[in-house]
Length: 475
Ligand SMILES: [Ca+2]
Ligand SMILES: [Ca+2]
Ligand SMILES: [Ca+2]
Ligand SMILES: [Ca+2]
Image 1: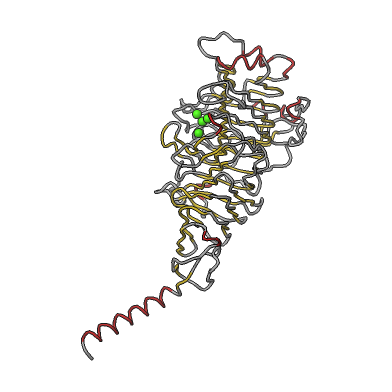
Image 2: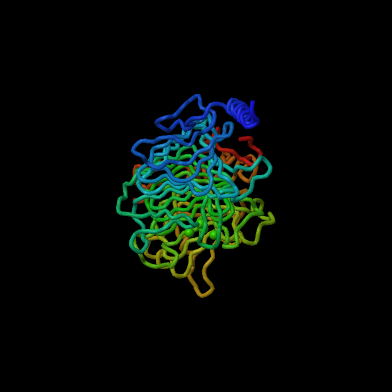
């Protein structure tokens, strides 16, 4: 045998060995038309309906790395772990369905993020026993705020932006805004979002969950955002309703409303880490009509009900970051409404900016049947103002009250950073005092309950699906 032939046969033998070691090549994407269930490694020739663009996928063991854009419907299966690399877009009317119990990780180096564009949908409907989890790709113990970008949903509902269209902040090219108030971006239910949220630079941030012009047919229920590196939740316009939201140990604001957002929200709770706050000042609520404080319409006018904001000053003498500021931080002509709620443990309970004081007098800002407790200053106004905010809040018609200490609220174990129990104790002022007589609460979305805050003293709706120690969870 000639030397060259010997060389050829040796190479063939090595190649054959190599192929059999790696397993059969073929299309490894179950979403593709030519999916081969026996394929062990990707041949890179998956075919999709209508030649639509689809994600670039690669599988390593149980983990499927997902990159790029899909214009075709796509499914994440419970038996795989998905790793989002870079900005991952669902586009052109595609529907991304995520099975209950699926774990999706955001890649740290490329700041993985999931962006559901206008006209597309996410169907992420977990259950109390099988929540869907978006989390860090880092190992237990190595996870941190802002390990990855976050979940961004864009819709066609109205905003007050110039031209009624915006681009989602944080470096994506996704646009949002339109005239369809009943727009449907899908379902996010029994979902956790952990270690997301990146403040690239001021006003260039990705929040844990960003809802941009999302419309009223979308379902947002039972969501926990934990350890977000920016706001836990931020709404830019739109009118989607939401219930049973948890903001746990966020960095910046817990619930931020902006650019004409006008949905209804009920049963929301936040708990802060006393040591963690943002240079922009961390607040429970932050609300602007728009960043300029203009009179652009529709006004930012969310209706919040049964909210429990548990701020950082747990005991009244807890050492807290100097960057904490207000439980309810309302400014720039916001028209926010809040009913049947409780705010505890912030340096300031309620702040109203001078340019927003007129909205207190004309009723476009309303706060009723609400308790402020354990705050260093209950009411804060601008230096140039002499508005009597205490008189407004304490006016008998509003049925609000101020308590000196968090302990006066009588909670089981709310200020526990690793295993909180938010239930009011027997005798707590939260167990009564709610009212739904205000016409803003007549919408059938609201459950008419007798208690204030997010918990009734009996049924803990966080049980089973929420996680208070995601740092150490093995995913
Ligand atoms: Ca933000
Ligand atoms: Ca904010
Ligand atoms: Ca904001
Ligand atoms: Ca802030």
